[in-house]
Structures are given as C-alpha cells and as structure tokens.
Image 1 (spheres, rainbow, N blue to C red):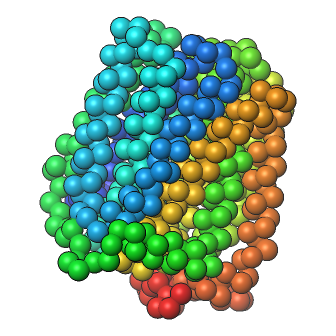
Image 2 (image 1 turned 45 degrees about the vertical axis):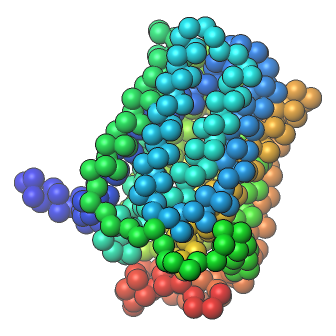
Length: 442
C-alpha cells in the first residue's frame, strides 16, 4: 500500500484527521496526556507514602475535583461568551506552572499534605475552566459536523492511550527516580499542547455584544440542560456512575500495596490496565459509521464498568485484577464517550459550552464527593468492599436508564433508529448532519 493510499484509508476511518487544526491539536494532546497520567499515579503514591491513609487519598481527590466543580458553571458560561482558543492556551500555561512548582517542592523534600491539598485545588480550578472550553474548541476544529464522532473518538483514543502508557511509565519512574520526575514530565509534556494551540490557524469570535449577565447566562444553561429530558437523563447517569464507581482510582494504591501486596510498579500495572480497556473502547467507537445506537451503548458501558469493579474487588491475583480492570476501563470509556458525543450533537450551538460544563460538573463534582465518601467508607469497612458497593450502584443506575430509553428516544431520534429498522439501514436514509440536527424546541 502506497503512502497516499494508506493516508486515504486512515482519513476514511478517522475523517476528523482531514482537518489540519485537529491533527495539530490531537498530536499535542497525545503527548500531554501521558504526562497527566504520570502525575496522577505519582500524586497517589506520594500521598500514600506520606500518610498511609485511605481517607487522605480520598480527601486529596475530593479537593481537586471540588475545585473544578466550584468554577464549572462560570467556566461553561465563559466558554460560550469568550474565545475558547485563548482559554485553552491560558489553562495549559497555568497547568505547566503548577506541575513545576510541585516537582520543585517534592525534589527539595519540602512537600506536605497541606501543600498537596492547595496545589490539587489549584489544578482543579485550572481543569474546571479547561474542560468546557476544550469541548467547544474541539467542535470547531473539524471541518464538518459529520466528523464530530470521529473527533470525539480520537480524543478518547489519545486519552486512553495515555492512560495505558502514562501510569506504567509513571510507576517505573517513581521506582527508579522518584515522584518529582513525574511532575517534571507532566510540565514538559504540557508544553506540547501550548505549542500545538499556538500553531493553529483558527478564527473564533469572543461572543456577541449585548449578551445577558453572567448569572443569567448560567441560569439559562441550567434550565436548558435539565429541562431537556435526554440531556437530563444522561447527566444524572454520568453523575451517579461517577459518584459510585470512578473514585475507585483513589483507592488503587491501597489495593496495590495491601490487597495485592505490591508497590509502585503494581499500581502502574493496575492503572494501565484500565487504560488498555479504554483504548479498545476508543477503537471500537471510532470504527462505528453511525451515531445511531449510542444511547444503548451508554447502558452497556455503565453495566460493564460496574460489573468489572465488583469482580475486581473480589480478586487477589494481579493478573486477574488487571484483566477485570480492562473490562471496567472499556465500559467507562464507552459510557463517557457515547454520552459526550450525544451531548455535543443534540445541544443547540449557543448553549454548547454550558451543557458541556454541566457534563463536566456531573462527573467532576460527583467524583469529588465520591472520593471523600469512598475514602471514609473504606476506613470503616474495607477497600474491596467499598469498590464492590460502588460497582453495584453503577449497574443499578444503568438499569434505571435502560427503563427510560423508550421515552427518551422520542426526543432524540437522531441517535435511535425507528422501530423495526436497523442502525445500518437508517444510516443510509439521511446524512449524518440531518440525523444529528438538534431539536428546535426541546
């Protein structure tokens, strides 16, 4: 196969890559996300090394997430009113500074729990402004709305590839050099995003003059998001799963050190296993030729995630534990990517930033509360028992969502084939743009 034919095949499979700005963006993302997961595993191990406390692990996770929650609604309004290109550039610059400060403090042995909490809160605020702006920015990087599914899947692929590589690499770096080097790597890797954002040729306007106040803008977005049943149902499911299941990650150092009797390398393997499952899910979603059926995939994803966590809590063998986390990671990515794609495509243009801030709020805020709750519960019962309870609640949430599907599909025919018609048959009848056009009066 010639280079031209190979590129044609790739662009057919991943049409978002036809957009030059998106290619630059995803390249920078691929590098930066590896650093993100190296910092994540290093932070978890650093906190556990200093405290040996499941509660403190949960508290650090809570502070980081709740800081994002505190600014989420304001960040969504800002993403709709301001230039998302400039917002992303600013957040990445601040993230680089946070990582280098953390690295310097750990290297000089001047780090303590109080400082970690402050720096985690700072990063949470940065991420809170970054997430909705990045989602709006991503939407404008593709040449056609029909390429959005591909762009979201590729973004997930970059995320999940990093989740596979970053933790394993971070575990090895911690064992050989120390946590501080992972923080340095995170800061350096984020420079790739800054370079990518500066290299893009984009023209985005900051927003129309005469807009309502920020408070009115926020209230309008909340009313729209929770007033439209499909958006509301997706946000509630994502929030429930994030509260019950996602905080398992903050307990992973305890599982690695006490249940599986390992060290930093074991922790890296466990977190990388989640990334492997997520990577497989991203490839699967990217191979789909139609958005039809994404609502049912939400049910499948949340159920697999919950079942994977339940079985993981029962395992005492590293190989089996890693395999079960592959299943859990696959399910979580199916859920989050499908939900993300649906929300981006059914939301009206001028409210996309605010809806994506509600999406971020639904998992960041509930993960924050869930991290605090699971840390406390694990101290009271046990870490495996806490993870099992969270998995069971995820399965319950998916079943509740499944019962709502027939009613929700009446509002979102763009992603649900008509009765008696397969997704493949429905895909041939209308263009993707026509099928995914948002409702006029939700």
